[in-house]
Image: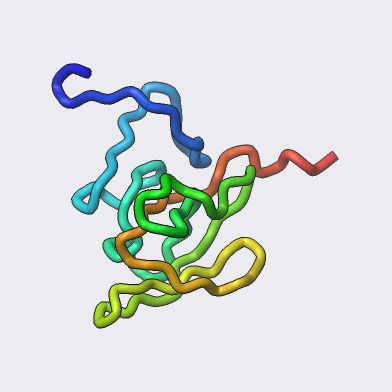
Length: 111
């Protein structure tokens, strides 16, 4: 841990590469691989590794090639609607974090 540089393992988003810097937090830019709260991403953003409860480090849309889509935000209640890979539309707190992009390894089941 030097100069606020932490090494961690993440679920790889399609398009990330070895040695790429991954930025986390609400001030991070909206680029593939970065981790942001749902509330700071625009509607229609493709996301993966979504937290179902704030701070649980990601439980939804984690299998290879999977992704979720942000449908709507409700700033009054602090909730966001997300369309999961199953097609279910789930309402989550806007403080929940998610990784931008699709999980890598998409063509795994094509033979």
